[in-house]
Amino acid sequence: MNINPALFNFVVAAYERLKNRGVALGGEAVHEFEVGYRYEEENNLPHLIDGTFVTSAGSMNDLLTDILNTTRS
Image (cartoon, rainbow, N blue to C red; front, side, top):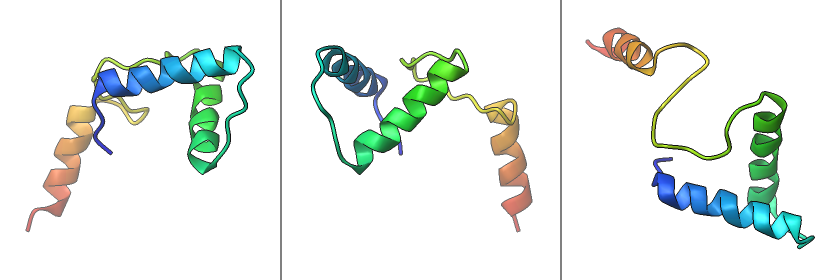
């Protein structure tokens, strides 16, 4: 999903403020968000984004180039 970094960062800030105030949050989307949030905490990764694409597979540019090269007829 392509999401505006400002909108994503707003969701992170809202989530953190609500959790810090003890507001109960529920639902599938909240659960999925919390799984990612905990992963970031456990791996010392930032919660906020700046719009840069990264991957543990290496350079995003190299990855996309390889994908395009293997899918061309």
